[in-house]
Image 1 (spheres, helix red, strand yellow):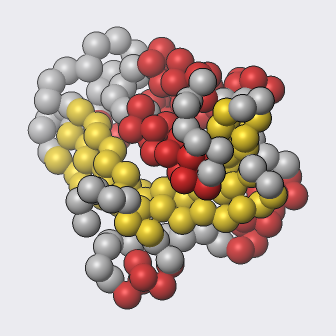
Image 2 (image 1 turned 90 degrees about the horizontal axis):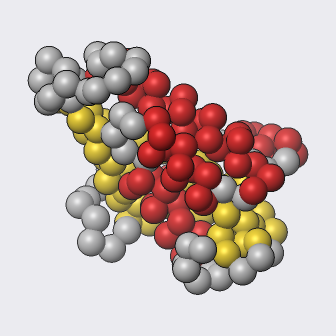
Image 3 (image 1 turned 135 degrees about the vertical axis):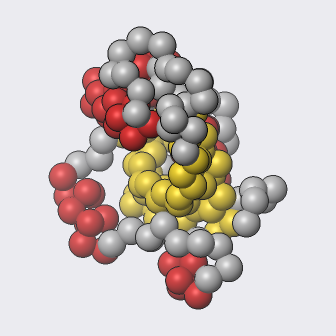
Length: 169
């Protein structure tokens, strides 16, 4: 169990935890984390997404697709803000804005902002990542989700980002 409360901020906390756990270049770790937090019915979908994300990170960092990752290659995510939309009782679309730092195998450091959306549902006394229905996904796509924009900018305020207490801004 995640142990996060059955509130909107509990859903946000799960999204932050998932983002912070999806670091590095280890396929097994990423798949394990995804499986831990996913609704059992959607587990395979989230495990595949986690695997694909690690594969992309490895490619972006210029490291081998499999095996050990040579130093100084690294990947770090720092969640800094969120928005959320209640889709139903105990069901939220959580958008998370994060700073991402990727260091390539040849030592180049790339800092960027990333905004991602996950669907969270309160199921059997705990928050779970869920795939969502086609209608829910179409609704979110048609609405548009907040863009990855820097804190302190008019675009950040307009997007409705809510700072995470204690996060760098």
